[in-house]
Length: 486
Image 1 (cartoon, rainbow, N blue to C red):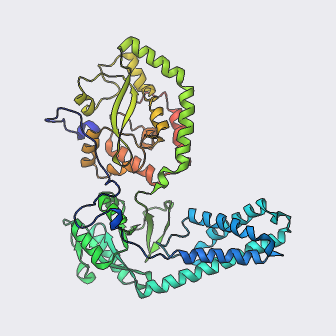
Image 2 (cartoon, rainbow, N blue to C red):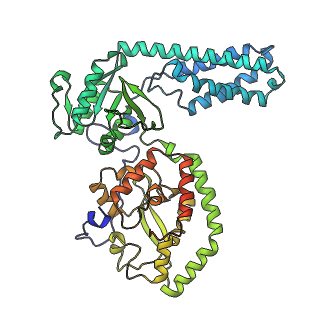
């Protein structure tokens, strides 16, 4: 299905489409029955300080192994900052899960070893024998792991006595099956209190045994959350996560922890996804982090600023030649400015070389132009085929409106239409839009399937890494002169 076949022509519009809000701005009401503002956020019980105390206790015991330990008191501060910082970076103070001692052993010991290596390099500890440092590091590891296991064991006992109430969201047959399995496994620490599903879903045969209410509206879900003190939401499958994205954002803003569960094992042995993972009563699960800043990390922004700045300097002569030729052949107004929708549904002004002159602003906002348009000159078609008309967007990247890699930004009119036609389209705006992306290097440019683009863009965001950005940029450079259009 192509873009033109999914977007009907506009009717009764005399001006360009307005801005589109895909996400509720922070601090605004989330709707009737539940406010997502800061004042309405439910305060969770603070239970991570015991983990921090266990880590600091391990540091003290490790330092006591060192001869004349009183001489190395600054070492305690340095080790504490280093180890706790690394643990926080690795989400080892995240209380949404209760791992076992063996599960945390590699992560904890690895970061303790890095902390001691840094401390030894920056302090008089480097003068001590290696055996002393190894012994101190080993004592630190054992003490930290033992202390953390004691904290986790206490939390597991508490969860067995008082399981966390949870809502199960997804297709009704799969949600009812998972809820029934959780009811048969009281030791998992999760107690389902309701099923969030569509009213049109078929009622499973086991529904009478589960005795759980089926919540089909937003208001019913909010009421169940407040009445039962729900702290956990279990989302069955990716489709449910995309279709119920607005409700999930509201639940997360209210303080709920979101987990995505796989109701059925995969048909093939696919590698696990990144992020905090594990299982719940035998169902594979992954921690969802709506609105997490991880996908717009400092490393990604540094890469954008450095590369876009360098490319602007290197491409300066090319930009000058393109602008001069366009001015001679097409007349004044070589730079085309257009409103596009960026991260979190915020509009920005995107820059391009003008290769087509629409009849009006309304046509510019609603016409789906393609690279081989017959009313373009040969030079303009050349700019489209080689993507040279996109080079000015390096300034958008340098300013922070866009990223080098990310979903391509679209005009407000088409964002509205595509969001109505494709449930996963609004989820593309979780990340800053980009000049190139996973969809583009797979040939999804110009007059190609919006559904396919949406799928590739969301897959890129779900599996984002800085190395993936580098690989996409390399593949884009290889395909730069390929006649695919933009």
